Structures are given as C-alpha cells and as structure tokens.
Image 1 (cartoon, rainbow over the protein chains, first blue to last red):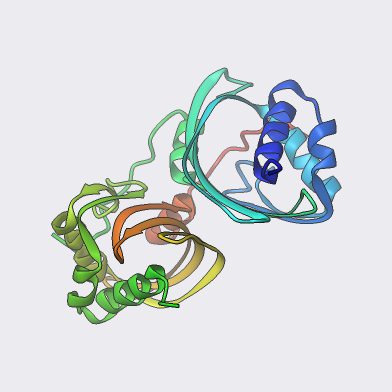
Image 2 (cartoon, each protein chain N blue to C red; image 1 turned 90 degrees about the horizontal axis):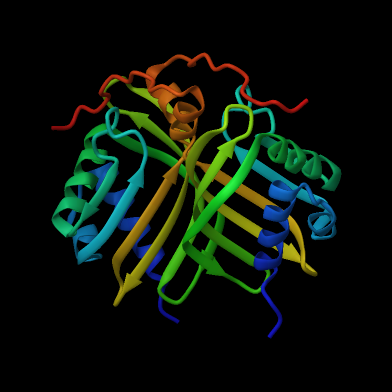
Length: 146
Length: 146
C-alpha cells in the first residue's frame, strides 16, 4: 500500500510553515485547487477562499510569515481513497509577538493523483480571535433555556 | 444495505430541534456517549463537553428551546462503517429574537450498534458570536505578512 496523500501533504505543509521550504508542498497542490479557510479575513488576511495553486502557495507563505507550528494532535480522522477529514488541535507560536496560540481545526481535503484539489478548513475562530487579541471579549448570555 | 446511522441520527436530531419530538433521538444515543460542541460556553451554555445520554439530551432540549433549523446543506461528507464526518452550513432562526443565523459546522460522529457514542462539533464561532450580538466586533489586522 502506498502512503495516503494526507500524510505526505501534512508533512510538506508543516515543513513549509516551519522551515520555509515550499518545494515539497508546491508539488502536492493541483493547479486548479479550490481552497477555503473560513474565518475573519479582516483580522487574518490569509483566511478566506482561494482558487489555483499560486494563490494557495501565497497563503501558505503568509501563514509561514506569521506562525510556527509547535505541535499538533489529530483528535479525529477519516480517510477515503482520495479524501480525508480530520479534527486537529494545533499549538502555534505567533511570530510577531512570540505568543502561544492553541486552536482546534477541522479539515476536509480531496486529492487527485496525489495532489490537493479541494481543501475546506473550519477553525474555532472565536477562541482564535481572543488569543490573538490577548484578552477576552465580553459576551452576554444569549440562551433562553434554563 | 441498511441506511447509515448518520442519516437516521440527523433526521432524529432535526425532528427533536424543530418539533420538540425527543423519542427518536433518545433511542439513537448511547448511554455512555462522549460529546463536545466547541465554542464560547459563557454565551451559549449548551456548548461544551458532556458525558452520558441524559446530559446530551438536555443539550438537545436547550438547542430546541433556542433555535429552529430552517435549512442545512452538507458541503463535505465522509462515511465510514460506524463513523461519519461532515461539514454543514446551517440556516437557523434564533427563537427569542426571531433573527436568522447562518453558520458553518464540522461534525465528527462515531456510532456503535446504530447509537451515537462520540460526537465532536466545531463551529465557526466568531461568525456565530457576531450574528448573535447583531453587530460586528472590531478586529485589528494581526498579520505581519504583506
């Protein structure tokens, strides 16, 4: 059995972010990739939707400019032949402030011939925003239930 | 082929939330279910971790007290024998204010003998908080990248 595309992609992604080595990840992204990291793009301009390999590589470079991956744990994982879904917990360092940031992420990926064709990432964004601000945002209790 | 547990669970969950009919969902939750909806529990007390069927049923009742599901679209889905991962876009109505709320959710579920044993849900929480507040939260631009 060959290795699942997810593992190769994941290794290359972390190598790109932490070591600014973009060759491996470049070879694993389809020219016509469809990509979305859902979240507040005003605060984090590298979030949002992108189409095509060069736009996605630029996002990965921006993430590498801003964060270091200290560790990650895959809490849930499902693998299909050419697809993968996982929930991960990341421990990052924000490079400008040297602050630790810990966040949970859900990732749905599709591959074709070993290359990423579709990526959808959901982030626990409120938690992320509070950590990036370095303070909690006051929230009223919204529920009507007891 | 029998129907995947996810479809039965999903139907029963929406029936519970929209029609306050809890019998179906009750029969589809394992006594020892392990459950977590990640998000700001100060604002939404029904978020957070729960252990056991009765605690989870109470959460579902609280969601039913607060929201109506107007529609949902499954944007990504992976099915295993006893597991499922999906990314969904929900259109809800907040019952107290009659306000529409639209949110994206990633859900990882495990079943045993047709009953839910594990559920992990990640929500685009910043988007949810802004909609529930009815205003945007000002965010500084955090990135160092150009």
